[in-house]
Image: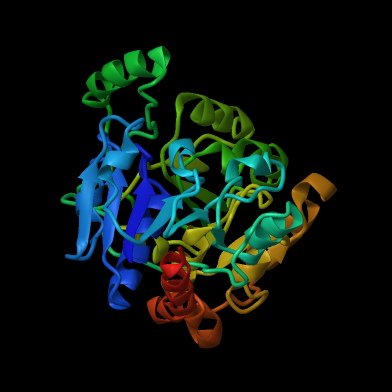
Amino acid sequence: MKLVQINLQPHFGGGEVYTAFLCRALSHLGVPTRLLVHPRAGFWEGLGLPPDTERITVADQTKLRRHLPTGPLWLLSHGPLPGELRCSTPQTLRTAVAHMPVQGRDPAAFAAHDRIYAVSCWVRDGLLAAGLPAWNEALYGVADVGPRSEISDTHGVRRRSRYDWDRRKSRDRLLGWIEPLTEILRPHPAFARRAGLTLGIVSRLTPIKQFPLLFAHLAPVLARLPQVNLEIFGSGGYASVRDLDQALAALPVGQVRFWGQQGNVAAIYRQLDYLLSGLPEKEALGLNIIEAQACGTPVIAVDAPPFTETVRQGETGFLYRDPRQDGGADFGKLLDELLAGRARPQPELAQAHLQRFSFAALVERLRPVVADAERQTKRE
């Protein structure tokens, strides 16, 4: 059996980190990968792919089949399989990793798959409710906080551009050409903690996080607590950043700072008092939540799946009521308690919880997956 993984994303994010550690875990089980990637995805060199991963750049994505080896074949796509690879073929297992929940989306995107591997129980439950062939156990993920060298860390954590331009849009192409010229004239200070309580966002600023909607409810709470600092490490498209700016407009000048995308996330997590998540229902897992806890940084997240799978209330962080239900009252109460001296959780003590997101745990979850793939690809 030969394995071909497919990740055609041109932009770097959690799904690409996931792909890299999945290649390493499968390599540990003796299963090498042929990985098909996008021509503009220049970040793979810095993600620590194992030596037995053969990376192939696919310039014409309508001709994926020419890159498939002969013989028993396991196709594993990150996200739904491209349409041209979904047709039934002897000795071919058609599978995908679901990096997004189907709740609120069209589940037909996962039609004509033999297996779908969910990254959380929240995602698995949505797949099953839609009648899709979900694997019985969530794969979860790994707290991989190694440096990501697609972003140079020569000068440490310094302010960078907060934009991740989408080159498919004419507006973004124009602004993406102009902005580097204006960035030369702007200061790029090094990050330093400030006095007070430090909340941090360490994430791409994508629509699935729903940060503008989150802060439409939380910004008034933060505005009355100037001793709470909000530090945002991540970048996003023009509209995402614009909408987030509008949601944060109520905050006093200087209470929130943008630092752009960073490579050494471990160095960031350890300088935060708490990691702050986005809204839950469009999230599949939240690798940043797992990473922060592995670095000893507790998390503040909405009390709903998938965060109820990744955060242990009072042990690795705090869960609060969805601010769309109470206008942020429970969040405000929590911050008041923290400022008054409520004890900070110590995630490093919750070893049984952290073990669920270890490399060794992922390898063990993959053993039956690999055995199943070998059985299925031997069938005529």
